[in-house]
Image (cartoon, rainbow, N blue to C red):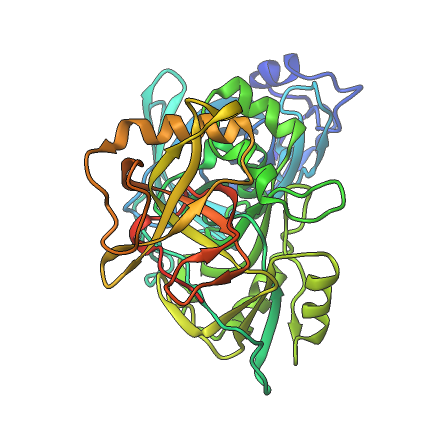
Amino acid sequence: MARRRTEAPETLSDYNAKRDFSTTPEPSGESAPTETPAGKRFVVQEHHARALHWDLRLERDGVLVSWAVPKGIPPTPKKNHLAVHTEDHPLEYLTFAGDIPAGEYGGGSMRVWDTGTYEVEKFEPNEVIVTLHGKRVEGKYALIHTKDKNWIIHRMSPPQDPDRRSPPPDLQPMLATLVPTPPTGAGWSWELKWDGIRALCYVDGGRCRFVTRNGNEVTRRYPELRALGAELGARDAVLDGEIVTFDAAGRPDFQLLQRRMHVDNETAIRRLARELPVVYVLFDLLWLDGHSVMEQPYESRRATLLGLGLTGASWQTPPHEVGDGAATIEVSKRFGLEGVVAKRLTSPYRPGKRTREWLKVKNELRQEFVVGGYTLGAGKREGAIGALLIGYYEDGALKYAGKVGTGFNEADLELLKTMLEPHRRESSPFSSGRPPRDAVWVDPVVVVEVHFTEWTSGGAVRHPAFIGIRDDKRPEEVVREG
């Protein structure tokens, strides 16, 4: 039978005390319909408040008994999620969606994520077992009290999607092969080559983490990117992109990014996030909603990525060109960008592999090198680094490629000295070439990016200039690209 209610239940006193109903659009419960349907209803709301979370609310005795679930309703029995018991809410909250003003309790955007009915197996003060019948969630769940307001929510039913699984935690980006001229013929897609840090973004439960090519997690260094997780909400994904800093003219600038790459102090990180923000430029998708999409052709993955609508102040999915690439190549040259990347429309995503299905064409010669030593400076640089001795790996051995003595500023020299000092050694790490005999030798652990004009016949570089430190690259991966 329907329950008749003429005024807000007494259990809503906590709810009402926390809200100013002249400001918030939330219902007070005092103008509720006099009849409510028989049976039990539930709602799950996605709540973009100070921190993204989901609110599970179960109809019980004229109110909605509520829990805040920071990582959402677990889709499988393998992973329990925290559920924080909150105050009872009025029944009108079953359909509430809107924006709660900033400064109000729970300020932020609220929308209905799922709704339906439920069956009760147990509803006791410290344990609740219910079966949810929703549009998105179907299955039996247990809510178990642990301590204070904290509970856990556990899925008792088998996974709703039996094929759903988590992505491998150690995926690596697919790599492009450097070629001297653009490929011709049909079947290619073209993108600008972004001058930043390559990073995979793992998103789960509204949280994201960024991992560079060498497996280092750098999420804390770029706090402005964390909200990307909230943008995807309950969807889990692995995204591929580049962390980029743009200059005043809107061009990617790796040297500006250097100011963000090596900072660990939390206060400095927050300050630099305001003064020198980064943007995550997205260009591929590896995983979505518990399933790998890496075997799908690039054309399909790219369409799915664009369909996610991931464009904001701190992330963007720039357009790509299908065809001969003439427009993309022209833009890259006109704005002085590093180059372009051509990708076969039919190519799957091959993690950690460098293939000819992705090709990069550079407008200028530049690549990474491993530092094997340095010479001491003179004059204004006395006691500091004068030039870096650089090399690359060939058949597993480090080959000397020349010395770099220009392009540095004082901060670069100080940071390099700090990074290299603990790795001093007695002998040269180079297996070939003729580095200076009076050098300070170091273990080959630091990678730098260098611009140069050409390669010599002996495998060295002419007129090199330092661009930046690449702590996102493994030294053993550095080989001659051209």
